[in-house]
Image 1 (cartoon, rainbow, N blue to C red):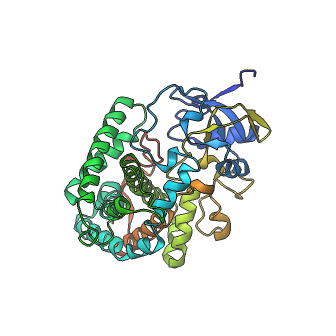
Image 2: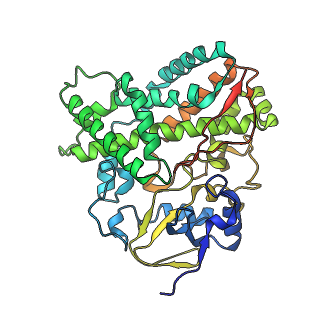
Image 3: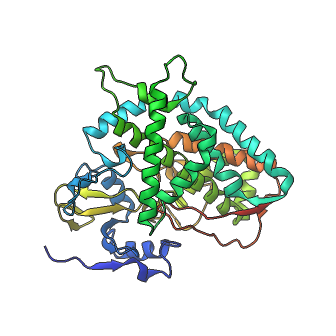
Length: 401
């Protein structure tokens, strides 16, 4: 097969990591699928069009298991345990079913009052100050508190989790990321052993990690130690880092668009529209995890060879004008049915299990924030300060009230 033409992403913008959207727009204009080289030097086939991305996310020929890759030559398969994002059916089906039976809608609904309490407590501490970095003071500790309590992580360890996950997701620091992942895995293994020694009757109500330790299906199947570590890691990172970005990105979008903020203050029902439009316009996870072709396949008229690495760009698909009219405009009053067709939580069997919790936390957080601070505004330069990460989030968000 001939060598494909390589699109150098770094050449499209001054800093692709900080503003990838001009590159996405230019590439989509040339076609929905391209072979790209990231600024880090890695190459992959990238799917940018909405229709192609949605179909790819549900295509079983695109596998999550790295052993399908033509480049795989190592036994180092799982960075932190074995989880749903690195497996395919039937393994994925088994793992997801065991987790889903415990991570239920009822359990999420039961968290509503606790999320509200945590938000109010953080705002109580902020209010006398008159100004703060919203990420440090609110957007980060709120979801971190919720997911740690959900997993039964002692409060004294919350700060360590924040440090570990930030390092694991850092871009361009493989040694730091690897060491943090190892430390986190060791901690989770110890925590799991503690949970195993607690009887079901003595476990704290709502302790999801204890529930996963003791979970089994009708045939007695259960999660292995490696799988428990992987699931705890996935729930921790996906359960708070992405929600931090959802809250902070969405608040920044509102505070830099006075008309949108005024519309939301006039109609509280638009909070849900704000959540979905933020997910579309500035998704916390800009791309799906790497997938690998189990056979040659044609996507958007482009033949992708067997064993190739593929990236589905959720951020690009969410701004495809073929799906979303005037996609570069942030508008919380978009048709809800259309807006909710975004791919920020993925699609198909790997659709984010924690999506209901993220939506709940973000909507409660914004309502509490705007109710407490009617004069909330940016404190300084309105330009976003994006941090280098595998996710899409701000480094800081100075605000005053």
